[in-house]
Structure formats: structure tokens, C-alpha cells
Image 1 (cartoon, helix red, strand yellow):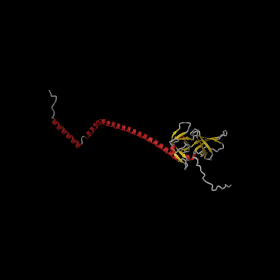
Image 2 (cartoon, rainbow, N blue to C red):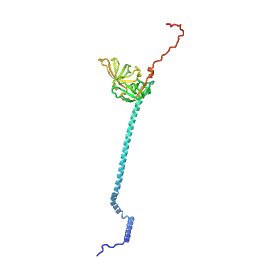
Image 3 (cartoon, rainbow, N blue to C red):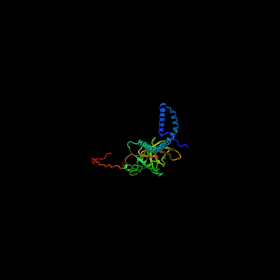
Image 4 (cartoon, rainbow, N blue to C red):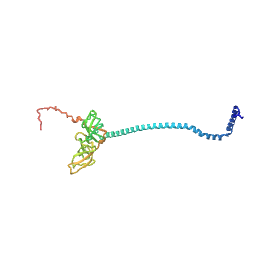
Amino acid sequence: MNPIFKHGPSPQSRLILVLFCSALLIFFDHKMGSFETARGFLQSLVSPLQYLATTPKQLMNWTSENIVTHNNLIEQNQKYKINELRFSEKLMQLDNIKQENERLRLLLASPLKVDIKNMMAEVISVDSDPYTHQVVINRGANDGVYEGQPVLDDQGIVGQIQNVGTISSRVLLITDVTHAVPVRISRNGIRLIATGTGHIDRLTHNFVPHSYDIQVNDMLVTSGLGGKYPEGYPVAKVVVVNQDESRTFAQVYSEPVAQIDRLRYLLLLWPEKPAAIFAPKPKVKNNTKPANKDVKNVG
């Protein structure tokens, strides 16, 4: 019977044989380059396995980078949106400040008389009653405001002070039905009365004879009569002239030059001190004595 396992060379012999073969292979490869082609072929065979081995790591790195980048993009986008809102709000504030500066500049450049004291005021409330045209300003008795004081904007006459409080006052606008202002046509000096109609864009002029020389686009200015408004300030521009002979008087309407529906900043005028208007004149005593009682008045 033959044995199943045969005895081969000893392990020491095998080790010596392997070392000898390795030395030969190293010698031929290093000196003669005999295995370059074989190495390249084997490298080509192994490369797909290397790629497959490194694919999970690359996939994990790619996923991690994309997740971090996506989160960064979301965070940056949120910051950009917040900054955009802030910039938009600041831009609106700048536009509002620019408009206010423009209105203030126009108001300060309004045609004021150099010898008339004035003060700037701001509208803080508008009367909600549709049948009255009044506004409330932030100036009162503490600022020297008095009833009947003229008020204007950068275009012309707005109205007059109706009621005075400590720190605020109520202004009656020229378009109110209870308000009337003496005016004259700047072109020829004809005097009229401008009365409010309850409409912000219309004044009426009653009892105008047909003989009056009135034309459309005539500028109406304060005449100075009545003692309320100083003379020469713009009030309205004539828009309608109807000289129907079948009527007793001509129909004349004008449009206020002041921006009644967009009032924000106003000017208060002090044409004269209120005390000087109503104060009684001091009585002058006659302390002179005749030099000689016997002298007679001749003539």
C-alpha cells in the first residue's frame, strides 16, 4: 500500500530555494529589466481592484464634503437674505430721509418776507371728519403760537391757526367751507374772496361781476386785507372762469397752490406781534400850560 503523504524537501531546503529564486529574480529585474512588461500587465490587472478598494472611502469623503458644503450654502443664503432685508430697510429709510430733506429744503426756500418771523412745524394728525379740513401741528402756546396765525408750506398759504393748546395747535385749512381769505389777482390787482368748498383741489369766488378781467391761470395772492395774512403770498391759481350773462355773477373757481393732501412740514408766520395788534394805544396826557392866561387865540 502506497502512503498518502510523501515526504518532500525539508523546510530549510525550501527556504534556501525560495531565497535563491528571489535573488535571481531581483538580479534579472534590476540589471536587465526583464519584468517591466510583466509588471505593467500585472499593474493593469490590479488597478481596478485598487479603485474598488478606495471607492468607499472616496464616496464617504464626497458625501461628507457635499453635506458640509450644502449646509454652508444654506447658512450663507440665510445670512444673505437677512442682510438683503436690512439693506432694503435702510434703503427705504434713506429714501424717506432724502424726501424729507427735499421737502425741508423747499420749505426753507419758500418766498418769505425777510422781516417776518417764522417757525417750522410738523403735522402730527389729520382730522378724520370728511366735512372739515383741519390738521394738528406740534407747536402750541409754549412756542408763541396764537389764534388766527397764518400758516403756509413751500408753495403758498395753507390756512390759519384755529385753536391753540400748550404743545399743539389745530390749523384750519383754506379748503374748509368755513374759511375765506381776501386775495387779489397778481396780474391786475383785482380783489376777490377765496372761499373753501370742502374739496382739497377747489376754491370758489362768489359775487364776481362779469366786468372783472379774470383769466384762467391767473395767480391769486393774499391782498393783506383783514389783518390775518400778510400781503403777496400765493394762494391759488384760477382754473375755471364762466361768464354766463344769464347769471347775476360770473362763476370763478381756483385751485390751491399748496399741497393740501400732502402736508408734512409747515411754516408759522408772525407778521406782527399779537399783542401789538390788539393792545390799546396809550393815552397821551397834555401837561403843557399856557404861558399867559391873558393871551387870546387869534384867528
